[in-house]
Amino acid sequence: MSPLPGILKGLATTARTAMRPTHTAEYPDVAPDLPPRSRGVIALLEENCTSCMLCARECPDWCIYIDSHKETVPATTEGGRDRQRNVLDRFAIDFSLCMYCGICIEVCPFDALFWSPQFEYSEVDIRDLIHEKDRLGQWMATVPPPPALDERAAEPGEIAAATKPARGAGLVGGAGTAPGAGATGPGARMPRTVRPRPAGTGTRPPTPREPLTGTPESVPDDTPPAAGPPADGETR
Image (tube, rainbow, N blue to C red; front, side):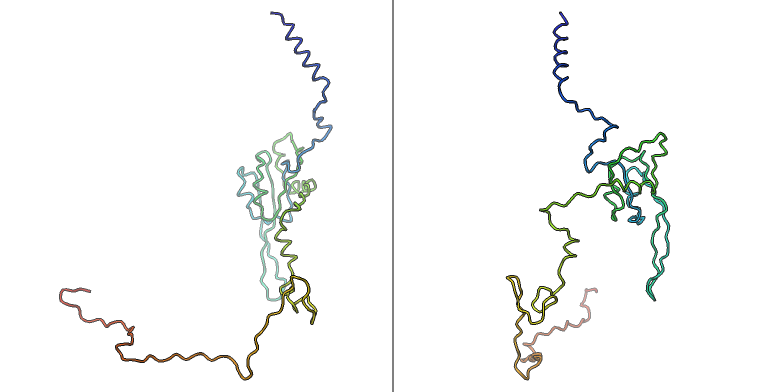
């Protein structure tokens, strides 16, 4: 069997693909276009950390190390009590053990950890992959801003509570309404109508209960019967 057909077929494939544009990523000369939620490295916002240890306890790889101590904060008012607060001494992540699951970022209740798309932090020595809090804080400059909210999404509860009008502001004559100003608009609420009482009347006295009348047999007796001596053969 002649190998010529196979050679011709291979040359045809080469000629057909030679004229197509290439999709080669010119890295590191050209930076890659990463998605906005890429998991590159974890950044630390130190002032938000309260040393609650929640991220270290939830980490499945146990690659987060936290050390802290307590400090006494004097009372700001006379007669007040001193308070204690946690001071962060060490916060380190061993990226040689991290599997980039993001659990520590999700469980942080004070938004102290963030994802950064930076991934160029390879080291020759594996021990250099332990990033202390100073280096973790440097990654905060590369954290992208959060995406904008959807225009059709509901208003966040925090913003709704902050913009909520004061109580009674929507009532006629309440806070925010000038004295004597009338109700305007279809949503204005009218004042409550108070029914006037006749002159000389005050609080209605309680209605006295009528005494029970009739023979003793007709009046129900709620007194339990007195215990008598036990009958023959009966034990208590």
